[in-house]
Amino acid sequence: MPVITALRERPRGRVEVELDGVPWRLVPAEAVVRSGLSVGRTLDREAARALGRELRRAEALGVAVRALRHRDLSRRRLDERLSRRGMRVEAKEDALAALERAGLVDDGRVASSRAEALAARGYGDAAIRCSLEDEGLAAELVAAALAGLEPEAVRAGKLLDRRGRGPATVRWLASRGFDPGTLEDVAGFADEAWPR
Image (cartoon, rainbow, N blue to C red; front, side, top):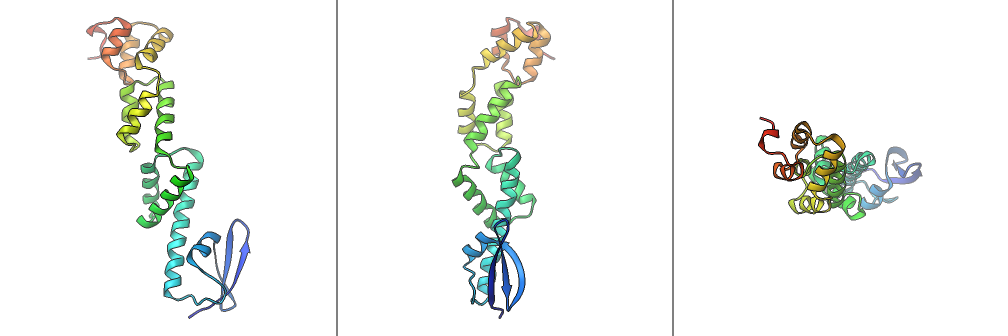
């Protein structure tokens, strides 16, 4: 069995592992610590398995952090991304739990920010609800995000004022997920304004 003869710190949080006096591989420092590698320890089957688990966990965490660098993602979307990359279930769950503890994955924050962004782009509650549900967000988070928005009737009224109060605008708002009853109340149009 090979013996760990040196652990050398390298740039970017890496450690060079030396086996029997020969450089073996670079691994994340956290994986070395969590797997219990130390100079003089035999790299037996148990140690190799522990290191393998930690390397998979570190890889999953790295993929997830890189994905979150560009956009806030729901837990489900992040889980799907890790699955597409071939991550094992245990590594995914460990990475997602660590990111949730750190506050980097927060479905409540995703729901409210996505709802606000869609409302600002002129979408009604039905379209926003559908989008949030497609993200895999829980029903109570979707409801809370919608409750935090300006009322749909107020948003519809502002869009009608900006775009004009004609039937074309009413149809456009209906196509963007505004409730027909709300639009009838706000615009004062009856059934003839609705698309067929």
